[in-house]
Amino acid sequence: MPTSRVLFVCLGNICRSPTAEGVMQHLVEQAGADVRVDSAGTGGWHAGERADPRMREHAAKRGYDLTSRARAFDRSVDFEAFDLIVAMDDSNLANLRRQDRAGRYAHKLVKMTDYCSRHPHSEVPDPYYGGDQGFELVIDIIEDAAGGLLAELQR
Image (cartoon, rainbow, N blue to C red; front, side):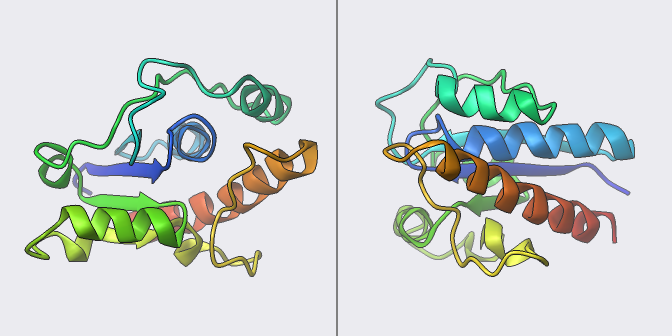
């Protein structure tokens, strides 16, 4: 199977997308799959920062190490560099579509929840302003979706 390159995208790249990157990397390593993962935000105000400490704490409790640094989505590079660009919610998906002015990369743009099999959510909610339950829910949804995504990539 050829290498797949997957980019996870949320708003600031400090909660949801680095979690998706970390969970997916963990699953890829366990499966011995040939998949490369990265994450970015549609906004760049957190560039260079690590994932939110609350997100890192909740992820660590489940065995995930969130080591990436936040960066902004770069349409001049990322549309070409990745096979699949996975948005965490409708707003970020719409933002990515706006950046793809000619619609040339529409086939690469999907939502994380498209790959869920157990969770009925249509989006991965932003936990930033919530409590512990929000961070746990994000990981629950991402674990479900990442498993489905990896299964799809391995087909």
